[in-house]
Length: 287
Image 1 (cartoon, helix red, strand yellow):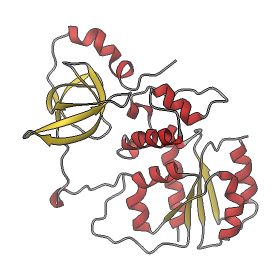
Image 2 (cartoon, one colour; image 1 turned 90 degrees about the vertical axis):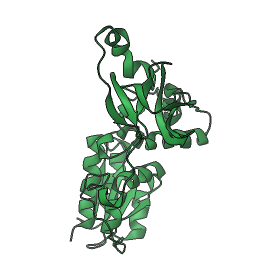
Image 3 (cartoon, helix red, strand yellow; image 1 turned 135 degrees about the vertical axis):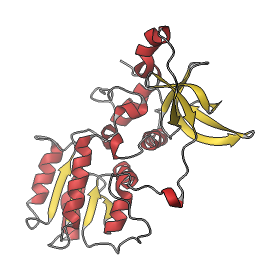
């Protein structure tokens, strides 16, 4: 079954019945990037891609599931999650109101310089993993002096560890996709761990086929990530299910950037990924 990124999953219940009840007052809602809304006059459903000034007024640009965009004035006349809202411009951060928390939920430390890189490292399998870790934990990692490096696939783990030569004070935390009992990834990780001193390497992982699935599906207008048939390249299959371009590697890159834009903080990620990354950071920063 094809899942509609924006329309039916978001508003199906309200379109049939909510409009027959007494109108509800609109509540203010900042037009944050990735927020999925419906413009009630036209029925246009899309995700916020930017807010800008045009003709002396603030407007919001919405991108639908086919990548088309349309511009509307900010204000009332929108629905979010079945409730009427009045879209407002996102608040611009000012020195007096700087965020007290980082995207990972940690206490923000303003004015601190990045720490000199530690000897320990955090390895992730690929570019998308690294970009997601940077978006949510980047501030924390720079403050702690933790460098994130690409492993380019778990198949390279044993060779990479042999080159790095971990030891106490020079540890490696490894984040692996689809690290579940009986999987190829689990067997490779277990074999690699037998080649290094105990306590110098920690391999943890999430159960998903790819880190894309660690983003909560609601962020892109889905109730659940689609199941892709065996034999179909997973990311291309996901893009087709979403109704996004899915012909070449460039489409995969663009699709991931749309997903990544929808992530605002740790709250938009699945707990199974959050726990792994937090434990790995603790491991590589421990005295």
